[in-house]
Length: 506
Ligand SMILES: Nc1ncnc2c1ncn2[C@@H]1O[C@H](COP(=O)(O)OP(=O)(O)O)[C@@H](O)[C@H]1O
Ligand SMILES: [Mg+2]
Ligand SMILES: [Zn+2]
Image (tube, rainbow, N blue to C red; front, side):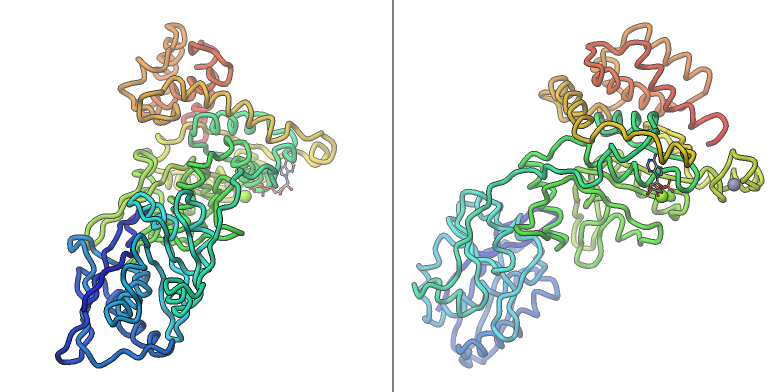
């Protein structure tokens, strides 16, 4: 007696269909599982056997063999339990196999026969739909998340019995219909709350427009954290596709929340400097996306950047270059998206008050050691350097707030439209992504503007990478100004945001 059902395995943020074959035969009673399985998959045997018994389907003393295929796909996770249990019931003749045709089945079983939530439901449902399944059975806790995918029927089940009753026509399982999708409208933390700080706000707007990396330096209380937190609100509103991509990462990380789990606003992640490398970059025995990937599509905020261990700063290099992160594993690599805008903040010296000599008593040696924690390769990947000074108390109380986030965002969206038109048909979306060798042909820099850049490079001795970054920032400034060509004033403003890197403080 043989039967096959379909389940799913997740690698990275994508899922593959896994054929779950069950054979029940005579012979010495045993329960074997084969098919390139991780340890936790083999533990399915015990969960399935006990769950079947406790749901009123005692497993007869027979020889049970479960094969998960394709054989070359390494299978991890606990989501096959439900398909295996239903497969056994089919093979035993309790359930006609043809009733399960066209179904994907996903869920972990508790010993009491309950169906438990699993991570990565969204990519599984996407894979099911792409493979042509007409329906999928999911743990009821994950069903809203699964229903985000249009074009496939999603049923939530709470128990193994409900799953059986779904197929026998006894009405088990609940059909979940997708909600209407709209990005979040209101911005909780508004730009208008920030008084003064015109230069820092301008830098944030440029950074948002071209997905440039930004470093804020200034004394404690100057408003660095306040500004960083408000950057997601000036980034363009999420499209449905972006929202789905971001939600896939959260789904795989087991971090979906809210009514249907859909991520509706731009991520803002601010890992502490004590976070482990795995927490930052992702990985682990059952690989999970880390903070870099959870920030994808939004902002990665590294507060107190020099406090991060050197290794933590250095592993930023790959995602900053490739916008993805590779995790090496025993059984093949996984890769996760990591396309974030880096916003970093730091104090200019260990006490935080340099160059205010009334307050800072740090020695030049202490100051240079503190700054040396930021390696040249990281500084080269920063596009905009801004020094933020604290506002005097009278200005904090009196001055009116600035523009609302929505107003800034509309300018950012226009600059993005110009970039979209420019990069149409290329793999690039933002100015910051264009590789150095393509700069001169794609950036439309006027001769005079190029001259400004060359003079700046000669004067400061900035590296080739830093030089390219300046061109890209100038292009974004021109896009914000709705200018076809990069003019000298655009390049000069871009250079102004690099000078802090050299000179007196870095
Ligand atoms: N420009 C500003 N406008 C309004 N409030 C400010 C401003 N700068 C600082 N503040 C107030 O000071 C607090 C501390 O700022 P914070 O962003 O934490 O400073 P930092 O991160 O630079 O140490 C903020 O929560 C805010 O209440
Ligand atoms: Mg702060
Ligand atoms: Zn100091």
